[in-house]
Image 1 (cartoon, rainbow, N blue to C red):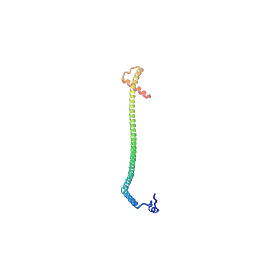
Image 2: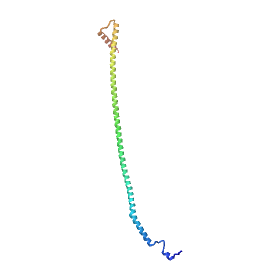
Image 3: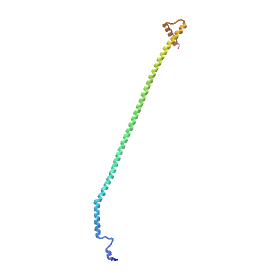
Image 4: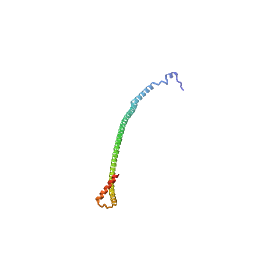
Length: 176
């Protein structure tokens, strides 16, 4: 084993590197710095710019989409409002048309009822006149027959029969 001399030990301090090591370390660091600065840093900056542009573009697209959505919402609300107004107008027109149709049908029904009533009254009046004429003839025949029996002579003459019947009927109407 060999002992180191304290004088020699003072010259060689393990904590202080040799000058050659410092120069080699400085050259290696400089080369590494230059390589990193020229090759790696631009790639990082490029990736950072791309990422920034992507984020910025995404935000701009989001803002643009939001503006378009706002425009679409306003347009939708306008269309909805117009559709509601149009529906209200159509409902009002339908109500008016319905009222007009009901009134027209009511008028036609009243006219038809009046026509039917008039026809029925005319028919009733015609039947009444026919019944009166028929009754007059029968009453006249009965009156002539009765008068013949009461008077005791035949009333065969038509003119005489007619006068007797008319007088009898006039007396009946006056008595009413």
